[in-house]
Length: 446
Image 1: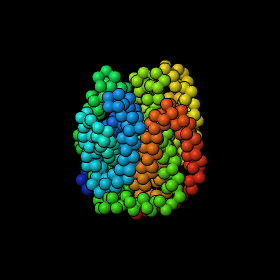
Image 2 (image 1 turned 90 degrees about the vertical axis):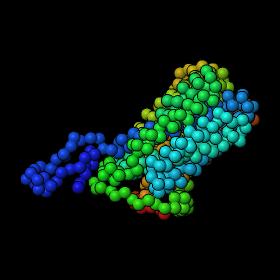
Image 3 (image 1 turned 180 degrees about the vertical axis):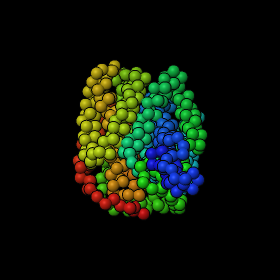
């Protein structure tokens, strides 16, 4: 039976109608509804918001942990770097596991691991426990719901509007930061950092029932074609050897030049966002005597405009050359970072507000064009390739999260880190422009 592309209802054919009531026009039997793909995208959005909650904590907790335990900022930054690195390195294996066991099972387990890791931090007494709970457990859990998760959902459920959907799902991470960051900073200032960690654990657990009940693995599970598809697409058989496939795809992609350019630009993206601003903006603002709640609110405002900028970037990616978009995004980001040392002050003033808005619009606007280039170059293996590209993003973030703390301990300020990151963004803009075009996308690498 043919299925409607726009609506989640079957169509009645002329032959079927004639067999019962005589010849009648072809028309739906039930009231049209929005295609199920949009509901799956909505559940994915909420899930990524839940996973993003814990990732909003590092910048808030650096000073409280330093005061409570006497740990250096470099030590705390090391735990953050483990978290960020595993967030990226887990992603390609998670994408392959989703092909093997299904999206719903992998995501439900990942949310539970995040809850365990964040909840266990309230009993830690040594730095190695911080690395275990905050770095290892939460890094593995959040990495399983990284942007490779969004890429898998987009590839399975959509053949049209992929750029827009990618932008919306990418923005979910910023929305999680927007929702939780002001609340968590208030909890830390009013009570302690431990209730904030418990709040994150409960938020992650709260999302699990929605995932289990509403997040379908494939359109074929509900008898639909993907949104925008002309034909029904059967659900592929589970792919065995998830780890082996992830590594095989990496080795195949690593033999191509575009992979290294995409990985290099995305490493700089991670270094200049998650590793730099998300981790060190609040402590840097505190160095200039800005209150914790004010600095965290500014970071949350970045999250507001990140939603706008990422969705707009997805719309642009559907219409414009992604290489040029990446070059513009990185160049503008680099210029803005060079001005940041001049803007930090005890209070918020108009130039700082302009920086926050500008940087927010550019925060992860790089994701939709990067994912589009992965699809262009690597076809059906693009979700796993993008997972490895995302791993480079998080390795870059991890290095700067650690080195930024070391630089602060060594030089007494973050000025050298802002300038170095601005120069790296300029290099990323040039790298994006030299990624070669491929008019005949690969069917796959593995």
